[in-house]
Length: 442
Ligand code: UD1
Image (cartoon, rainbow, N blue to C red; front, side, top):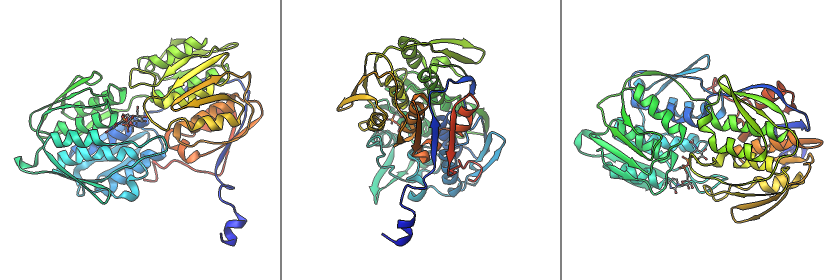
């Protein structure tokens, strides 16, 4: 270790949130555009020679990273207010660098549109991440079924369409599991393929429907998005479009859970309630009341909440992305709760951090059993991934005393200026050490 490192030990100056808990929240929280939609919609820009304009874009580090990747391939990118304009006209490359793609798993989904447009793509394998191994076998299998030859060398997937004027061939693909990314990759690839593609056991997530909405606005022919069978009839060319990203159901869910954890009344808007049915049902089971109001939902939480059982599932089941935030809420719900994570193999890392705040949790494999405690107590904790970081903020808002949360590089990937927005509804939360999202810096 060098002397400089001794003067400033690792971690000492990490940006952190300080939260004085036990404050009731009150007022309205605005929900931004959906990160997971926006990232894939950006990837779709590669399919057209004329610009697409995406409205309601969230200002997040992940969006900045995707913009950098696209720019490195020759895509034009600029920001106009809360819209991003992406122009695939200048696309010259088909080989994003590992340096950039390793920061963003969703960048692998570019393999579909790059292959469809260029007949060739070289995209680094995304590798695993903190929540699990994150395979892409279904994406690759589907592209091969559409006529691409694939090889993996040096951690990079090289895909090529030979013959047939470089066009992929429509075919029937049955996914072994309803992977969101594989469904989106194959749907984008199929838009410019020759003939019809049918994707069975497709993911039904709202972000898949949003992508289909943009692709249709660009001239694609797609039926069935949002169901388990999607049919895409290939066209020769797609064109530009003007399209708005849907509200982020995971951000909306995070806010509703924060309101419940602090026994508060909050209006969260805009929300599409059908995107959150499983979460709303669980909140009501706990004892919260939720009512639609205008474009959003008002949640009211009074008194003691009851524990419950939940398991994460593909949409329309309970989303894995809200499992950690919900566990922070269940930590103080009366009685026992049982949480079963079925999507990712390593997504209970927040348990140890919640335990540091006094939560009573036992785990066995991917199952957590919670015995509700009356109150959590503030402590220094770390968000080990994006949603775990959100869970720590919720736990801190509910806890007695001061909680400091590190791991903000994860939090900023998915929530824009979270502390400022929570301050506006009464939370006592502040940030030290600035890490700012980078949409404008792309
Ligand atoms: C997307 C979301 C992520 C969310 C996840 C599940 C984006 C950018 N990210 O990730 O926030 O947590 O959906 O809702 O949209 N699987 C395979 N083989 C494959 C692909 C996936 O076995 O080839 C498995 C995975 O291991 C996992 C499950 O399928 O168990 C779901 O993964 P998937 O839907 O692909 O997640 P992502 O699209 O990466």
